[in-house]
Length: 419
Ligand code: NDP
Image (cartoon, rainbow, N blue to C red; front, side, top):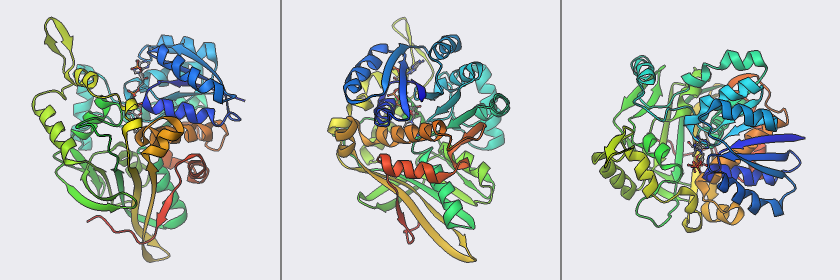
């Protein structure tokens, strides 16, 4: 019998919660806790008639470790799923350690306030030493390694699609397809259309911070950083068609480079339409993507947070979005002394997702892996103590669960390679 505390009730969490309720034999009891309790209550009321999972709700400010500790001690879960924002990763990890509970999330830590001088000093040192300047990196959470090990607990980091499933694809390629992997290209294509001139598919603040940052990739043991959106390729995606894609910095490159040091080059590409890029550039040029507070008519506001309030809520895109996503990894390397290529990916249809859980495919492709990751921890299939990313675990039961619960894999042994 498992009891799970899920923190956050936005686009991704709603899908993960719906999926947990489809697996009541494992998720017997869940508590949905978030900043705005009314959202948790509304989701619980919608799901309760369709499941035997016992759902309760709670209000919590996950920036406050003491509030988290009393919530966790009161509910006594077997696992805490953090599907709030990356800003809360460290406070929730601290509370899990204090209460001796396993932890998981879908994105690595970044601070809400990037002007905090204490954080900035560490960040600037890391930029110089590591060679990439994204606001997020794994060092903050990897620092909890010994504490989680000593407590006999597991922290599973970044268990969405990318990061998450993409690393399971890496572990699968390493386990079944290659003796050595030379290159990995992660391709994230969203061929969906929501009909708005501009909207983001997940939390706008986190999304716009990510895509407006300089790009970078891993080559021959070090990072190469490039101006944002300066490397563009065209690719023909199965069931989507031709799309322009751009090289981005992405968090799983960092952990794959650490865990598979033999890989010579790791890149990440994401598709963007011209309209999205033009809107983003314009917003950036006028300062709307800034995370630095400004004073507006006597009130302090953060421009990117104000922009978030103006943009459509990603959770509201579901009924409008048509088309498919295609996300996967292309590998080159050697098997039995011979050169080999391998492509493993998932295609997901926005409208089918909406029919099933009333969500678009971006939240679906993140929420389902979160539930499958929780399933691995709760059933003991993934049981390494310490702080770990997905490629460190056995990919087979996880990919089987994804096949079963809505994100089946497709495989090609002769993919077109990205130059
Ligand atoms: P949303 O903004 O839709 O939801 C965030 C939720 O967290 C909301 O319910 C919000 O509450 C809650 N929240 C925010 N701050 C706090 C707080 N201090 N205390 C308690 N609850 C809080 O985000 P998404 O669902 O789009 O994204 C969720 C996570 O998934 C993010 O970390 C994102 O980076 C990650 N992600 C990962 C992907 C992957 O493939 N790995 C892909 C896409 C997203 P409220 O309703 O009050 O605002």
